[in-house]
Length: 253
Image (tube, rainbow, N blue to C red; front, top):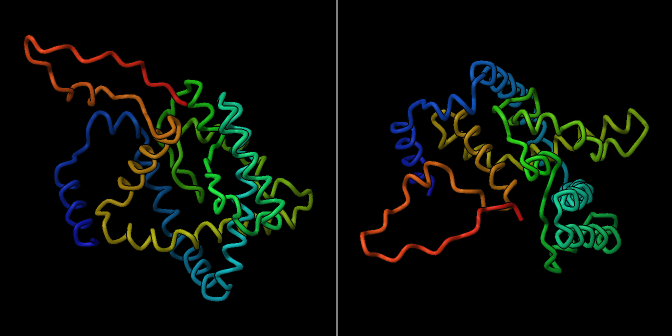
């Protein structure tokens, strides 16, 4: 499987040159690459070694509990954003998920809701802005935080108000929770990081394009509208053939 991924990466790199579309979505690529390089250096020198040490020392059960607690807090913010996006059913489901894990999962230490089939649907304020038509704008790489966009960067201060560290007034506790969250996230990405190092000839482009595609999918709940390229590639009906049935315009659910 890894050999196949390497071959695919080589083919993509050989055939994909810089285009006008790439320039439009990443007009400050020089700056972004510089910040990306800084983040890579910080990760190699500090974050990755700390994450590896954390994984080696802390039992898996405890690590999973930490991940679940942070995720449960995030689920509460997701429920609010579902409501802000005009999706009351999804908001109710996420609220039920938080209540279930908080009450029966010992404050979120255990993900009981997933065992009961209550799916996690993560939402943030950047997605909410996108839901109501605000375009993502140019791609940005933030120091430490990594891939983003103008829209998501503008939404970030609001998202951070619902983080675990924002739920306490003690600065020391807040700093500790922020550090633990960063280590938890980096630990969960260790395997993905190794795979990325193996298959990506240009790691910056790989991360950028993956981020933008994923965010587009998230904003539209997995059903993004057709792009101009998609329309250009649509088959042209033959003369005399019945016209395809009209379909409603794609809108976020």
